Length: 231
Image 1: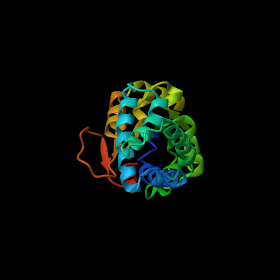
Image 2: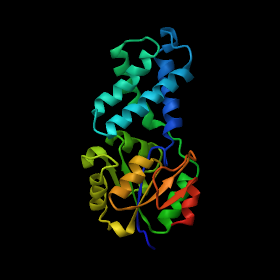
Image 3: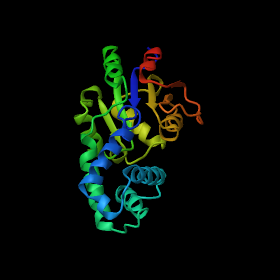
């Protein structure tokens, strides 16, 4: 086999972050009685939250803001869209979100099947994620994914973020893996694909959303089952 060490991204690649975060936010919307504060449409609230979350994550991965600022400001800015300038509420919802989100279990289709397939073929599987350390481990445990991965490398543990090559070098070291036998598998063209390229690693772009590629990966798939054609 050309590859022996497989490095996966988690959110948006295996674990359905969009569906799970929407379900979590809906719980928070109801539990915090936001409808009584004038947030009459949950879908609109979720749209605003998603916009600010995406923008703040981009700033976080580029080193412009810290983790704590990302966590609560996405709530704060979403609430401000409805003229709710309530910082304590935003911070409370931020804590609730990170407590509840990892308990959600939705995975992309064929996630368990492909991980079983790869383990049965004796690949070594690892995770490289920009997600928060405790949150990511909780997601894995609640989704019954922990057993599949030998190493879970987070930005916190490595003191670096994808797409910086340092997090990939740290991952290779932790896994005891050679660059030539390793491949990065993820959905994010900037963090996962460009990051893998920055580290000199082959890459597989998991194009769930069927977007036009802007970074040339070694391989591109649209469904996790297609990994069987490569590995």
